[in-house]
Image 1 (cartoon, rainbow, N blue to C red):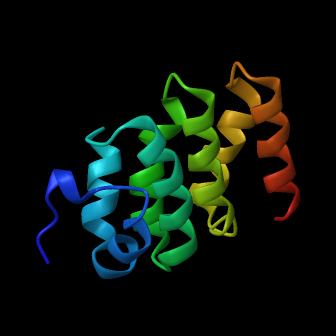
Image 2 (cartoon, rainbow, N blue to C red):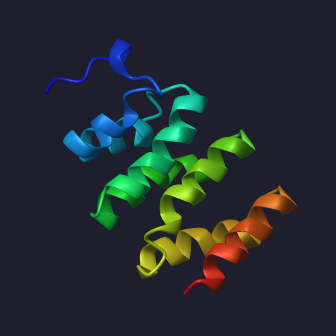
Image 3 (tube, rainbow, N blue to C red):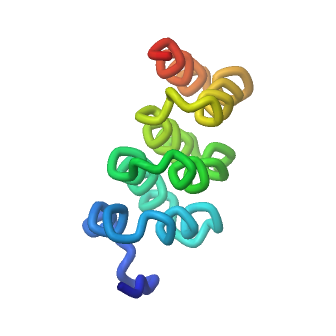
Length: 114
């Protein structure tokens, strides 16, 4: 399956996450999707993909996004992989450094599940 930019919508993210999770993660990593799509996509990728390395690859840069809702989507994507030390480190960093107290608190809640 070839993913073209006009195909990337919130409606087909689940299909893409199941069929080509690495390709989808690359799009998030490279900043090639709009913020809303990245937000929903990171959560869907985290829920659909069992390969934690792919999820981390897709979510890592989103944790630095200027929009808090995108960072929240990345947290939701990582939440299902929080048993992995790499995911824990990313979430811990956000819990300590994010400008949003709401997101810092949310990251701490995710870490409580470890």
